[in-house]
Image (cartoon, rainbow, N blue to C red; front, top):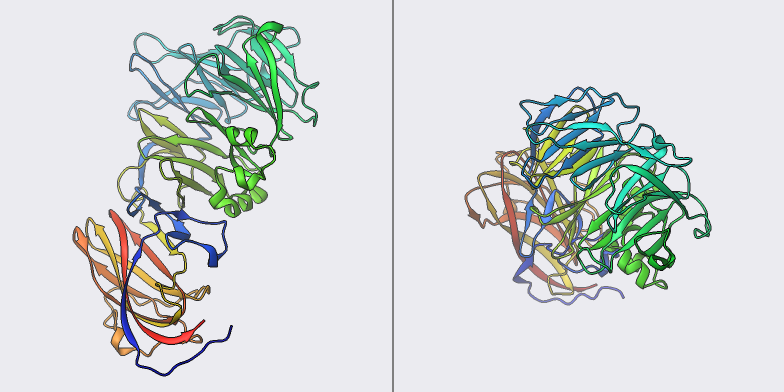
Amino acid sequence: MSSRIVNRKNQSVNFVLPCPTSGLNARDSRDKMAVTDALVMDNYFPYTTQVSLRRGYKKYIDLPFPVQTLATFNAATGNSRLFAFGGGTVTDISNPLKPFDFKKKFISNEWRVCQFKNRLFAVNGLDHPQVYMPHENGVGSWENVAWTGEGLNPCKLTSIAASKQRLWLIENKSLTVWYSEGVSEVQGKLLPFDLSSVAARGGYLTAAGCWTQDGGQGIDDLTVFLTSEGEALVYAGSDPNNADDWHLKGVYQISRPVGQNALLQYRGDLVVICEAGYIPLSKALALQNATDAQIAFSDRIQELVLDRIQRYRNKSGWQGIIYPRGGYALFNVPLANGFEQHIVNTTTGAWCRFTGIDAYSWALYQTRLFFGTKNAVMLFDEGYTDNGAPISGRVEQAFCDFGSPYLKKVQLLNPRTKSSGFYALQTYWNTDYQDENIINQVSLGDKKLSPWNQLPWATKNVKTKSYWATLAGKIRSQWIGCNATGFKFSLVFQTNTKGMLIDWYETGVRYEQGTGIL
């Protein structure tokens, strides 16, 4: 429909734009998004009433190798331990001032771990399986696991899980899973269970897990095996040697799993990192006729996830972890150079993305979140710098017409924020579904800072300007001059700060309303 112009006096209108608490939306087209969605949400986390700049990290310990696996042993006595695998060895870094190198020599540094019966087991498909056994006083010891079995090569065990009071170990590149002969056994004889007759699509096993349907551990628990071809083999019972206590519940087709750590235990469910995104088994198995997009935990960021999986599925570093203290789940995603993290608020389901964090692996230790890098382990969610470097945050809010279909000339905006001190804010408008791609920026302290009443109105052929405003104090409400003309507007909110807490609640908008209708 063509625009219609009626000559009448323009009006000045005020509008309150809520901040994008619905989080990142990488699924819907720009004209279908809610105003509380975001086209981009990097390093800002969506809470219920505001979005906040993520906290930073600081160095926990220097290490002379890339930390490719972090593992935690949680002790009932309080003597918990944090281990770093890298450089062909394992180091106890529970006390960063007194790290202890166990002087072990390994081929691979990428381990899968499982705590069971007050021991921490680790396998990687190349080295002999290891077990950490705590001592009553001080550091325990890592030792070779004493597993035997007819035809068993322990060095080929590549994945491990606990379910129904047994250990389940997957043999590398095969459809055979090994399990402890007796309930609660931690060493001794393992028995093989061949799943080749059940896995109709072939391939090999990649992971096993306990699907806790009732949210605890009990008779309703199921044991799940994933294949490389995307089949979920679900069993009830606990003993494959007893026909009365072991039967197949079903074989379900999902998408092919991604990475060596494709399963995440989440509130009694199992979330699978797979080619269709992050999919909970409870939905995938209940809605067999649904599309992957409909059942994906990551539905709202589906395009982003699918792009990353398509391009980087064979790289190391894919991992999911729940961080209760932060109120979110984190999915670590490898890129061509570095990593990013996809973050979901576990209360609201809103997503965002963290950038600037080169994390090879993550672990929880004493309720805190740690990650390993190329030469150190970092404590995350600590302070407001990235180990002394600024944290760059960027939000591009969904397009909004401010409740009016008419042509508008935006004059002023007022981002209402809470901050712990002064910070520089870059803010401008993208108009009518276009990206302005602004390059030139007015420097902080420039005499032309926010001269909204000195510049001509922007038109469809004139790019809007970018301004820096200095905000201070606990609560700040300050009008900033801007210059944009259009029917629909997307607010860009960008910061680059050190040592700063920033909460963004809403944005006041003042515009002149024209008479042209889109």
